[in-house]
Image (cartoon, rainbow, N blue to C red; front, side, top):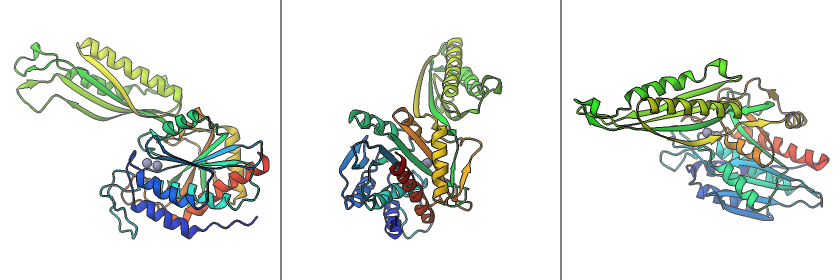
Length: 383
Ligand SMILES: [Zn+2]
Ligand SMILES: [Zn+2]
């Protein structure tokens, strides 16, 4: 089999996406650019505007006993200014692709070049471009859409580029690949009073300080088997008015764990702390959660498949000892299908993700596509 991937065409697609960077839930133009690129490959079906601007492009298989195999990319950029000189620099003020989702989308789009050259393909291929990865919403929206449409994926694969790892290497692990996390919002309501008469009000000050301290102590090793983290990311109380004793406070924390069950346990402990402190200090509390990500995981079978595929494609394979502490919303897909996730090395000299000097390295586009097309070939041969 001799398949030709036109990398130059894909580099140009990546640069167009980079120029047109859009924030989570605003990826309208980005989705249009990807769609118009893919239309020339004459897909069998195009589903648009999923959960906002999500896009799914389906290439139907030919055999009766087909597998539905999905490849997922993310479309969104970040609220970070482009500070480096690039010919294709972001045209959107204060928004740029600093997580490499322009590269991820390009690689998944590139699969179309391969599958249209694959004669008598048995399996159906779904190219999935999800919105709002950075805020943990897009994967759930795509999952619900697939369920509504009764599209059962047999497998779904995704990758994230990884600065700090050798260019084009495949990095993954069995079990948790990326941590689970959630944003916890704690609202405490008391009663303001004159600062000269604090006894006539209900100040949240003591509970506020106890909760901030307590959140940090929740992660004591004795209570957990794996890494858990509780990071207070924002807190505010009262107003800047020296004549007023405060009546309201808010605390925001990110809770994180290597296991979904341990994140649940951490949440329960955090809630118990808020309830106890609120009751002791006569406050009304309200709890909200946002940006929730389950763990992204690989089964033993998937790990073997990824390892074998990387080997066949002569890509360096590295099995990571520890999970990544960051979260990836790909974890939501494990609810609806067998899923596999891996990192693609972006180079040891590549600036870190979300750094304003970061730019997706075009040299690894071919490697990512080789891994994806290797997986397609595996299922064609063995599916
Ligand atoms: Zn990111
Ligand atoms: Zn990302």
